Length: 293
Ligand SMILES: Nc1ncnc2c1ncn2[C@@H]1O[C@H](COP(=O)(O)OP(=O)(O)OP(=O)(O)O)[C@@H](O)[C@H]1O
Ligand SMILES: [Mg+2]
Image 1: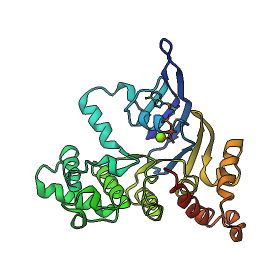
Image 2: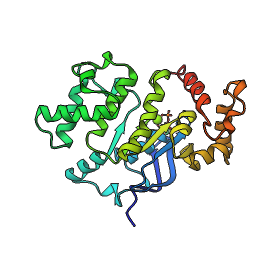
Image 3: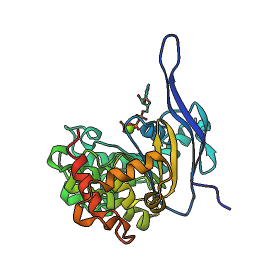
């Protein structure tokens, strides 16, 4: 049996707790496993402050758990110290951030990021080889180097720029992408192009994706499995459709009903249609959350 790609065992994170400082338990006792050789979109859903980003930072080895263990391909992240090991880990586990306009320096042409990543993480040391890597990665996200060459971030739409960010993350050839609210800053009309891309990357490249969101509709639409977090704890976990159709925990029932309640009246029966359970609800929730800063 092969080692799991990623395994969280009773992972927790607390902040503060020193003299006169408030102790925050951001994440508590989270366990789940992503199998190797079975790429999936794994969604982490929860309200603001439920610990999603803290969990993402721990999986990216950007912050250490205060309880439990995280193993990537069987290796505890806490044991990754040597720079060669850190680099190998970064190559395999890449982040996608919430706001592409913050991820890119506004004064730097976006293609430069792709060349730099190719230089650091692949054998492409000359410019021509880096351009080839950039173009190849851009094609995986439905763009091409010709379209973005020499462009500054503000010359692209949020959806295009986020796809460039995803292309950059693909250059090292990762096995896992950790995408923390990757579409929340993107115009509602462009969200589905980015979200659908995750499914394609799963199928065509065999990349697993941890998709963090508070947008239930897109999560149900693209995910294989989900966990729902509330105040740092996992309150529900399982197959996305099962959780959707038969939520067990009061919080997930509440979430389900909040999606149902904005379904257009004429479509009342749609959520029971297993073929396309959340498409129209997804569109309306996406449009609605686009109004919220
Ligand atoms: N560096 C930190 N120091 C102290 N407390 C923190 C820190 N980072 C997060 N927290 C606290 O941990 C809890 C979880 O925060 P986290 O950012 O993980 O939530 P989230 O689910 O990502 O929320 P959002 O949907 O708003 O992004 C919050 O109470 C937050 O205030
Ligand atoms: Mg967050």
